[in-house]
Length: 156
Image (cartoon, rainbow, N blue to C red; front, side, top):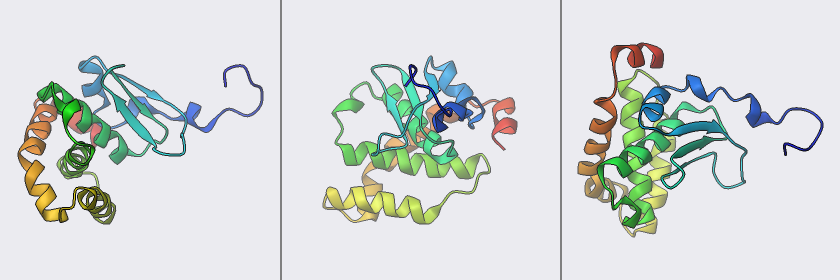
């Protein structure tokens, strides 16, 4: 991509530095950067590379990935969790964080996302959420303890 000519790529114009709570990711030593959409997901967290890559400026997507990062911080064996667990932990935590920083979550999208992964685990959305609720609380606490007054003002 760097060796091509033409119009700038869409992701090159993403302002990932202004995402809410991005300063926390940087405080944790993570790189937050723009990347291209790969046809499967708009953002991802890599614990191995210590980075969050965003192909969107969607704040909820960032909070979801920040929640993944917090999960790996509180549980060094998080990589062993089943995918449905990791995704529900990140999504439910991100939804709560949205409320906490004064952003409007998309409850319908959260529910559909949770429902899809709960069904993969052969659980109802409520039962799946109950199984991961304690971890979500720890994830949120890991993030919230890093929030200072400046972060809250910037996020709102």
